[in-house]
Image (spheres, rainbow, N blue to C red):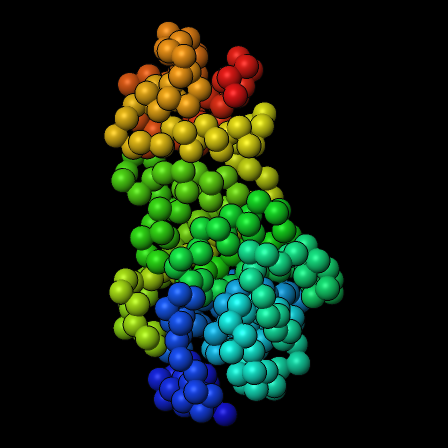
Length: 291
């Protein structure tokens, strides 16, 4: 049987089922075999491992995952795609399709149901642009037993996830992702290899999930709050941003003293601070009772 991810087969499936794309769901189906092979290869799957796919569409990537992994669970939010997936994935008994919103699903329970017999699990997905960050943060914050997260996302967002301090792409998303993972951009993907074509180019990024964060923080929630507050207005100094959040009464001298204790000049901007500097600052603020 011809593989799904070709222009001819994709169009044939869409037309046969009378399927129409919903812009609100960010539906763009990949029609390039080479990119699919790169995505699956980056996940390092084999027949001892499992894969969770989010937004399988008409099953182009699901098909490849089923061939590479021992067990695949695919979560699709669009009810209209469920019968299509059941049809095209019939040759693959190792795939289970869930109808639902991954942001509302109990993923811990799904992992117990689907991946009890496999050694490691990776998330592999072509994510809708509009929910990329919420989905990734849910996967990471829930501390699911993941080996890799390999996703195709908007190129601009991928660059932000992998950015180092000092550049315009570096921000709170960079720090959040790098706290949990080691990011690596695998390839860029032109908008021309999708039906329908999105307005922007994409990138495939692999997030290798860390066994432990690269830094020690006394309170994770406080650490991320300090990071978010520091980037609240990028053009402002870290002192001004943190003053607005924690010292609205005007105790500027105390804030600057704590910044100096952390070895951070108050006139620096957040994008110049490393994740280690943010961790040290968060711990110093917390121990001084600033929260």
